[in-house]
Image (tube, rainbow, N blue to C red; front, side, top):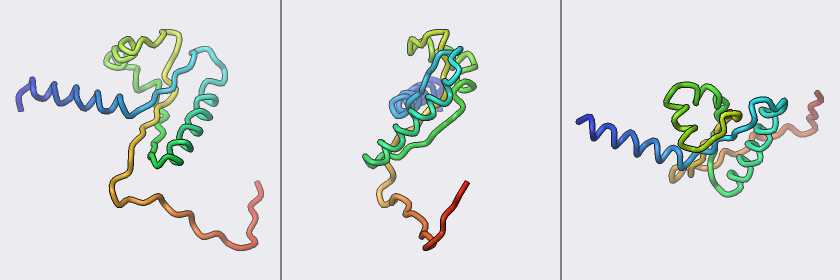
Length: 114
């Protein structure tokens, strides 16, 4: 494969990825940034599920943008330098024929206490 064609295919793959993912950012000095973003991500995942959209939580936000390529993406997205990527969500529709997992059968009279 030619280098030009490989570069074009790579850019298309990146563009498709960026269209299907959500990155949650927070101020670097905010005490509860991770917890707040986790709550927001959970609510987004619940809403996505109710709409038939699958989701995948990725908690490697800071490291995902640490290298020079990640820093370039942050500049392109106009993310302030005093913010960091806490986590990401990937969204997508399940393949045809894949069904939502059914809950496990519950044991009658069983109560869990923590």
